[in-house]
Image 1 (cartoon, rainbow, N blue to C red):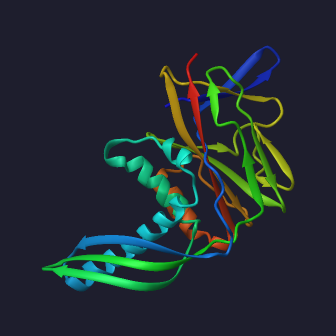
Image 2 (spheres, helix red, strand yellow; image 1 turned 30 degrees about the vertical axis):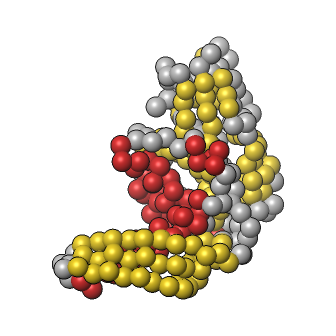
Image 3 (cartoon, rainbow, N blue to C red; image 1 turned 90 degrees about the vertical axis):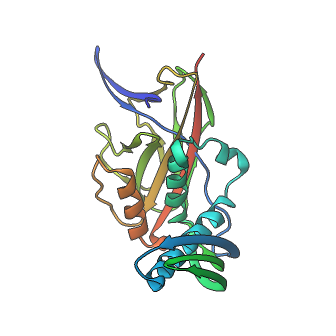
Amino acid sequence: MKSFIMSQSLGLVSRSIIVCGLLALPLAAQGDISVSYGMGEATSKTRLEACTIAENLALKDALVNYNEKQYTSIDQLVCVDTQDNAYCNMIKEIDSSTAGTIRSVIDRDRKVEDKSCFIKVKVEVESAVQLPASVDSKRFYVEGDQIELDVKVGSPLYLHIFNLHEKGVDLIFPNRYNSETLIDDRFTFPSDGVQVTANTGGKKESKETLLFLFTKQRQYIDPQIQLDQIKQLLESIPVSEKRLVRHNIVIRSI
């Protein structure tokens, strides 16, 4: 899906790269303890192995459910559904990897049959202490509009911007026009001399998701990174060392 075009004019010659994007908002209160619920089911070679996997899935589900509470219903509506909701589910899991951590399991209900195991958990979730960063942008665009995102940080942080869509993911910052990822105050995307033009790619309406990853430490990320690799990357960075801001935008044809 091609939703907007980034280009830089060099005299009379215009070089451009195609990217796509969408938006969501920062998370809720910092350091709070909340109750959340999750379910997991698995079948494996042994009951013990099945229940181990089922509990891990239940804890992950509890984090996803906790994270969803941090967003308003309007943010949820922009998620693009594909077959079996795979795209939406992947975004929720990526968000949840930065939402918080399981503090304790309050209650657990387990049902076992043959080599299958089903587990329901009630847990305490401690929300992540968020790094001082925010992103501001319009939510709706008309095809041909110039897209601009205003990024602010309260201390020097490294920034990467990913564009998630149903066909995969694009790393849109850093890019060929700006390779420096350290942000020390305020940053406008795209940078001076570069334009991002809203484009629906021939559709009546385009919806996508931009993920802004702020980290304390410099990250070296392959520009060809895949969606499952982003999830693995985010899970590898300690919660206290990162902040993820999701932004969803809707682009409509004229």
